Image (cartoon, rainbow, N blue to C red; front, top):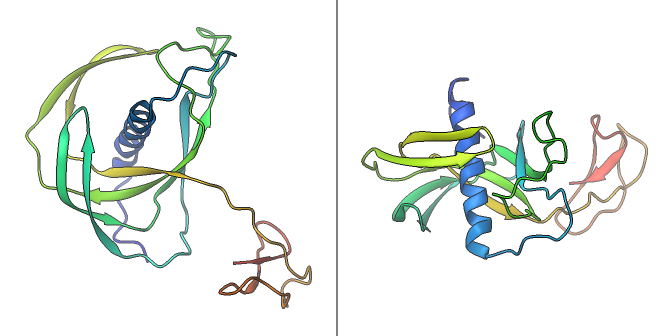
Length: 183
């Protein structure tokens, strides 16, 4: 079950935070620039309507090169956004090649995180939309790399599904995907 929903005006700042954190994670991994163009060096994030896993709070310690350590943060294990590497094209960038970013290779799930309050910080950044001065508040999201696991189809007789599934899963109807799947 999700905690209280965030106001609509909070989503753009959460998405920006998610992208900033995910790209920072990839930079820390030291991935090499790909030789072919265009690289999927952007993240496109989709709001998660429902996370079927049970939600709980977990205490995590976080560190990044930009702002240092933050310890004792509370992470809510109910995914808020699913982000996937994306190549972007526009009239100002028709070949989609942005030299500022490294190729992203994994999808990300983003979770709400609550850390101790931090002092207001200012940074200057440059992206393909221009240079800008930003005032940074507290961390609100943590995005983690993911691995996609294909859904296992079971008996195709929705809504009365009853096929065989791996241990711990049941054969359930899925109106959005059509048919029955192990979940």
